[in-house]
Image 1 (cartoon, rainbow, N blue to C red):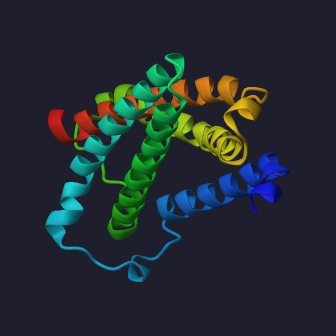
Image 2 (image 1 turned 90 degrees about the vertical axis):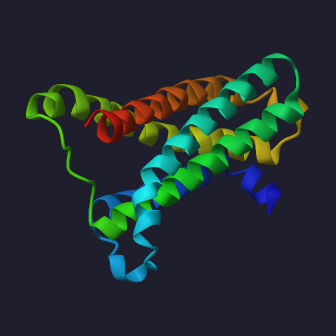
Length: 187
């Protein structure tokens, strides 16, 4: 299997990206009916934004550590940190999409229209755009890392694309924290 994946990293990246985006947009646009997911207690559904803020902060830390460790030549720690950040993102996205599906869409903005239009929406839009852009980049670097030795990996675009992916992911996670703060602390 690894040999087959190794020869088809770009194609598999495209397929995984398409599937991921279909699931995300399916949930965001209400195409996934709430009846197909089990109903959690209300306290848990209400806690999801707070849990996701912690997951986002943890992912920021993991990405930062991964970046630090690869610069220090600690490949095994780098790998663990980047896998951890990916798993944290998967947890975040699973909880976010679960809540989105149960509520039938995103929650309305509770603040003033001016803040909504000129602060919240631009922040949210950039956050979402960067998250979407990161999906194929993260799949690509993860698939390269999963199918090659460290020596072979150095001859690929893993490091170059990984730096871009990590940078954009850090910005997206950070903006997500700002969006959370505006929604759940400021208003």
